[in-house]
Image (cartoon, rainbow, N blue to C red; front, side):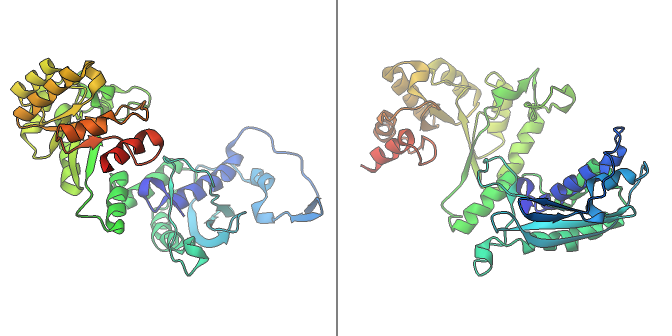
Length: 360
């Protein structure tokens, strides 16, 4: 049901997380709640039955144990509170049966784990999760049982599932799949704005720069270049902007000379004729990102464009992240015959205004 970064294994991981949170209660030092004789509870006229195998407080009766092997895993399709199908998993251990189900959100962020739905419109309007259930029962379950892994080893369980998935660049895989399903394999290519200056650290690059700093995970410019080349080999990546730090000239020149894709200079050149001249001399890139307010005047911007074009470079006229409805850059891209404009997705007035002006 849940697809982590494009992975089909996320459902089981989340189910296990819920189950393990319950199982791990017996590992806490806090005393159990007082026993109760209630087997049912009525709230607002609704009777809730306390199931003996899934009672939170009965978990305290378990003795502390360093191992709790997984004996069996069984997934099924159930319904959530909105009547949509979701996944429920039964986890059998030598301590008993445990169960967890996966919720889903109506308002979801773009960086959330993705849901794996069946997309069979003849069944639950395409929202069925039989594929996810099948993945758990026929792929994940046998592997985890064979590994004889303990349910308290959450990291090990997650790693087993990640290793089985085997997809390293899940986001690119999803984009590639979306392009294919839309029927635009020949028309749509991928351009990347890496902004590598943001994660440049002491001559190396920290791809996980939003986490706590750890110099041991830094990679060299050559390793980063190899990563880019793997993207270009496996995916339709034809343009990379700012692949290295703005002053890492050697890395820029080496990469541009070893690949046939478009290498775009933004932070490197900042629409400045002096920086462009050095980039031309060092063969550091082969395309200029033209931003008028980077240099401050239209005249200087035109000079930068002419310098780049006379050197055989491409030129991409660009918006800024904080835009207005002004359409000047649309006129500029046509007037300079650059053939490339970067102005965001066709949504919101400040982006659409540029596209509409080009259409006029």
